[in-house]
Image (tube, rainbow, N blue to C red; front, side, top):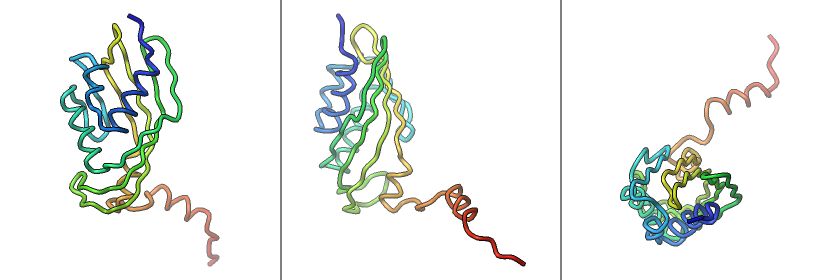
Length: 154
């Protein structure tokens, strides 16, 4: 059975994260599905659904927008943006009431019409900064700023 992999990856993001319908995982994913995430790590189907619920609980008004999507063969890639208001604790950070926006990329690998594996990279540091849990600028940014300042002559 042919599957529209672009539509499937879009549904995963917009329905699971955007509306909280984690049942879409059962519909689209193979039971041996593996998810790879820089924060959550590697996990199976049940944990992937729990991770989605965790983000939805912390950001109940979470909106997922697919900005671009492409597919070739058994692989689909989506560039996405998620926005929401931090209303419940997340990663031990108490609710801040702050409206946050993060972007990321998800690469999905399909086989026999089912999503087998996802690799996601997203701006977790940017989210931590928006929540006040990380410094606003990294060492690299400070170094670049210092290079632009006029130097005092001695």
